[in-house]
Image 1 (cartoon, helix red, strand yellow):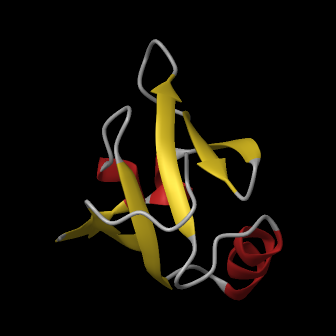
Image 2 (cartoon, rainbow, N blue to C red):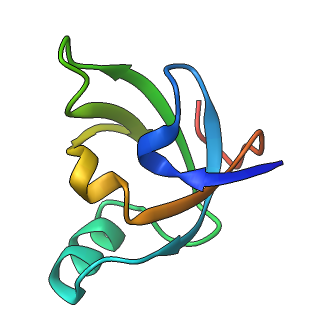
Length: 83
């Protein structure tokens, strides 16, 4: 298990969300799409310039900017439902 920011996940890597360090409004939006502590997430691709990246979260593909993904701490090498 390796701790890192969501923005550091490489394509194909899976992780479990540990905590969200975002402003209240952004934290709420992230929680609404399923990014909650204990939830699974997988990086499924990056745009040609690397930002944004696409993540598989709760059965949906969500694009997040690096700025937003860098406030999400995850444990790599652990999977909890992210395909």
